[in-house]
Structures are given as C-alpha cells and as structure tokens.
Image (cartoon, rainbow, N blue to C red; front, side, top):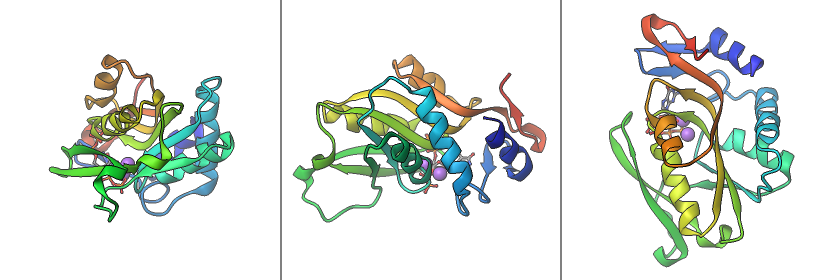
Length: 190
Ligand code: G4P
Ligand code: NA
Ligand code: NA
C-alpha cells in the first residue's frame, strides 16, 4: 500500500532496532482517510471469503478493524484486555503474553457475539511475535468459528509472528512489511 508506506517512511520514528513509533497516524493521532483506505485494501485482499465478523483487540486495532467492517457491512468486535464485570461463564478468555511489555494479559470476548456459523477476519495494527493474533484466533476457535485470515497493518517481518502464524495454517496478509529497523532506518521487505 503506497500511501501507508509513505506514511511509515515520512512519519515513522525508529526506536532502537525493534520498535517503530507511528503515533502521528496509527497509535495516538489517527488518520481517518488512511484508515478508510486500509479498510478498503483489507476488503480487496480478503474478497470472496464471506466474512461475517471482524475481530480485533483494543485499542489500536479498533480503527483499521472498524473501517474494514464498515465496508463489509458486518459487525466488528474488539477483545477487551481489562477484567470486565461479566460472569466468567459468559465470556471467552485467553491469555496473551507480550514480549515487548513483559506482561500477560487476559483478553476476553462475550460469548454473545461469536458463534459456530461465523467466518472471522482478524485485524490488528502491528504484528511482532504474534501473541495477540494467536490469542484472537484461539478465541474464535473456542466459539467454533472459522478464521479466514489475519490482516495486519504493519508487520515486522524480522520478528517471528508472521512465520509462526503461517506455520500454524493461518493466512496472514500484511499491508506493509518491514525487514529491518537497523541503524535507525526502515527497510521494507522486497
Ligand atoms: P505480538 O502480539 O505480535 O506478540 O506483539 P507484542 O506483544 O510485542 O505487542 C505488544 C504491544 O506493542 C501491542 O500493542 C502491539 O501492537 C505493540 N507493538 C509491537 N511492536 C510495535 C512497534 O514496533 N511499534 C508500535 N508502535 N507498537 C508495537 P498493545 O499493547 O496491544 O497496545 P495498543 O496500542 O493496541 O493499545
Ligand atoms: Na498497538
Ligand atoms: Na494492537
């Protein structure tokens, strides 16, 4: 995606060799025109999959997920990270470990919103180690739903998430793939 690549090149800030800060359009201030194009691009890439629900995780996955859901005219669900007050038997729960933050979060989705007839597209802003995406996929599978694929805005291809998800049989489609952040520079795959 040319516009997204330009945004990453012009506005992304490389922090160390692992982290790309994109606060000006994705993680803090958000660019709605860009998000709209991102939604259209995911719809194009997953055309024909008969998607019934978009599934993401709060907070930064919500914007690309809602734009995709809007275009498909299907609901979007975001997994919550906080402990909700709901009874445990009413929710799907999975543990997600973050290597970046060195903490485990429980993520939850109400059983009301996912079922065995759903065809789920998972969307997230970043793919690093794949823990969040795996957790979301396990939640969909707890519901008996099918995971049609995983759409990622920015994949850090030098981290293992994409490969692990593909080895597990998931289709991963990333709009921008970063080969390296070495020497303070963003190098794209290809
Ligand atoms: P993983 O799910 O792929 O294993 O990733 P990881 O645990 O490392 O990610 C933890 C958090 O850090 C996630 O956000 C993820 O989106 C974010 N993240 C990972 N790598 C980068 C990066 O290079 N740049 C930026 N800006 N974020 C990164 P989160 O804690 O779920 O927070 P939120 O932003 O969605 O609220
Ligand atoms: Na994030
Ligand atoms: Na995220």
